Amino acid sequence: MSMPFEVVSCNLRTNSSSISVSPNPSNGSVMLSLLEIVSSGEKQYKENVILDYEGEIIIFDKLGNIVHVESLKSEKQELNISFLRSDMYIIEVINGGNRSRSKLMIIR
Image 1 (cartoon, rainbow, N blue to C red):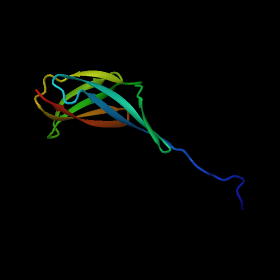
Image 2: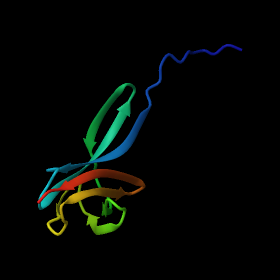
Image 3: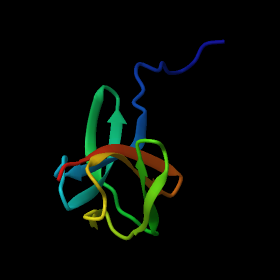
Image 4: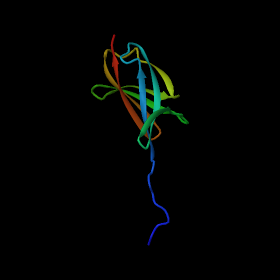
């Protein structure tokens, strides 16, 4: 049996989330930006994420202990982290079913 058409190529679009933290290292507050990494064929680019519900921001110390939890209210959000001592931390953002992590260095 022959097919009336032939598949030559197929572009699959996949999405995943990422976060941007700046400035990094920081000494008092950071701007957290939620980005969506979109892959279509061989191209990959970043888009701003549009939130339609609140997410959660969790900051862990280097031992994995939770040191701060805050609601994620927008795609770009300033975090006051002046209470954290000089060290390395992990920021995790939970947005729907997606989890994204980034390192954060505090230098005083």
